[in-house]
Image (cartoon, rainbow, N blue to C red; front, side, top):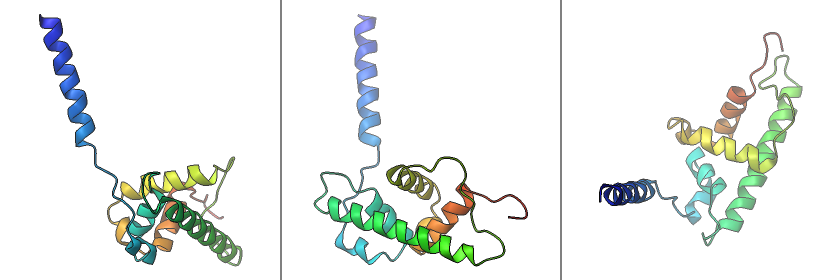
Length: 132
């Protein structure tokens, strides 16, 4: 009997854990205005079932790649580097997923302009050695 109760308790705990997970909010058309990094995070974490998932994913990827390349060009003209990527580059999807996870863990970042949040992430993720 105690094994059965243990099994029921375990099942109840698993269900409670699943139900307590924060639900992913659907992408709203307002997110496409990209006023804050929170909008970018919403776009970059759109789930397949979302009616705007395809558009949001493409928008996210285009925006992030555009910001990254602009920052690369900008830093090429600076005496000191803003960020210094090293090692094998992650795939685009991996890099965006890492940015999303980082931004979600930094509530203050979510209120920044999206391009500033991308730069902040790059500076934290790929710091430069002194003198670079």
